[in-house]
Amino acid sequence: MRLLERLGVTPSIVPPSQPGPPPLTTAQVYGRSPVGYSADLGRILALPRRDLAASYTAADVEALEAALRSPSPQCNCASMSPPRPCPLRLRRVQAQALLEASRVGGLLGPIGTGHGKELTTLLMPMVMPGCRVAVLFIPASLLPQFESEWGYYGAHWKLPNLAGGRWFRVGLPVLHVVTYNKLSSQEATDLLERIRPDLVILNEAHNLKDPKASRTGRFLRYFEKHPRTRLVALSGTFASKSIKDYAHLSRLALGEGSPLPLAHHVVEEWGTALDPGKVVALPGALERLCEPGEHVREGFQRRRNATSGVVATEESALDKPLIIRERKVGPVPAQLFALIELAHAGERPDGEQFQEQLQAVACARQLSAGFYHRWRYPRGEPHELIEQWFARRKAWNKEVWEELKGKRREHLDSPGLLTKAALRAHMSPPYEGDKPVWHAATWPEWTEIHAAVQPEPQAVWVSDFLVKDAAEWARSRVGIVWVEYPELGERIAKEAGVPFYGGGTVASEDILRETGRRSIVASIKAHATGKNLQQFSRNLVVTPPSDGAAWEQLLARTHRPGQQAQVVEVEVCLHSQDYAAAFGTALERARFIQQTDGQSQKILMARSDQPPIDCAG
Image (cartoon, rainbow, N blue to C red; front, side, top):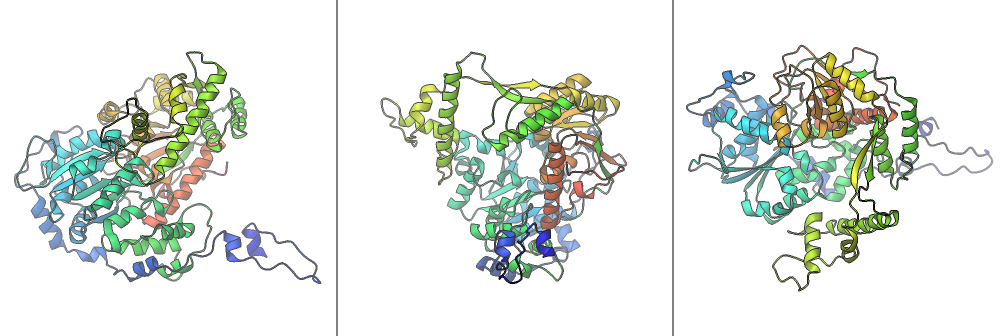
């Protein structure tokens, strides 16, 4: 009885003279039956285990370095701003990753931030046997940093030929560097087919975690056509919400040697016992991965990391204190709390009713920052036309979405390409080219009206309380103010008299030139991944993310090797239920990452010099 009560199940009490209800089954209590035995589990249990630390000797590492080191290094490391130490030796995990990938022919690398994934990716084509053409995928925001890192490392190590570069050395592989954004573009539908790489390297591989996305579909389609292509996938956080985030990457990198299930339905089943959130199934057969008394996530992580082709880090790259504490903002206007409650009830402050719960949640988060988004119609379209426009747009988007759920083909694997295919299908005279056409049922009605309404997004400000508080923080100390919304970032920057770095190549280049002598405001989406910002040691997170992986990346911008301060400080705004709940969810997801990846999460290892943060709302 007490166990059921703790699980939230309260069976009704019946008189002793009457037969009681049948006992609840495990499936009724948890929602699903325990994880069962499968051929995939049997395969994984049979995989040989290896001790990575004992797999390669100091002589192996020295031989690797000797083969890769530039014979006549010419560097300007000391004259860089700030000066940088010469990268004369490989870090332990870098050497292990290169040696393991060359031995296995692929790599799954859950390697934490600050452990030198950049140099590992640049040297990978040089150690992969028989590599002629390689593609390295990186986030677009890292492109400016890549260009400087190429020269920095190239002065000391033998790097491959860079496609489009100034020099070409006969006999060395060619490396194409492509951003994930470019892979998503319409013209990149057959990009990999045109390059025809025999090695694909993914830095920040979690950018391909969604098989439904156009970029991931193109990536998967190439491997389906060219199954002998080698894959090296590196990420500080492969799975932020589910093991489904990277099971497909593990399969392509290691094949039958993958420590994750190969069958999609088995991945789904394992997720019911491993993924964060409410546990809906007991581990069942997954307990075979565990030692006595071990949590199933830890058993999964230990077995995964002991598999050939997997190189993982466990320790933090920086042994310095990290303090996270709540920023006491205020006073928060009572009117704002009322508007947030109204949003959760399904209504925007201007009276517009939400159609989906996600819209309500998004609006509540915006209101927590003092504003909300709405559409404005500067051309003055009548209300009836606007309603008809949204209805037809919704029908068109639904048909596009349903089409993309099927098997994707070149020139038909993104909304933009489907639009072009629908245009070709309704041409007069009929289209006679070699590209595919799509006879979409909703296209005639949508094309008839799509230009009749031209809405523009508008930010409506309700209160500047958070803007003023963040600006005061930026003026009174030097640090980074992190924001989710560009409108908020621009307003804080203007109030504080400091620069705001949003999206785009120029912002990515300029933020790297900051010296750390003044505060800046930065977009979380644009700059919280991959950037070296250790010239700052203080942070204010104005709009806290709910993703544990996003927090790991954000914290690693300043809590990373090269940090000169004695301690890195982070303040978080938790003045609303929505922001407090987001931080609580991030903690939960970070625990999942730490237990299944084995990589210490900064948000969990941080200490506070104040009472513990209450994330219950």
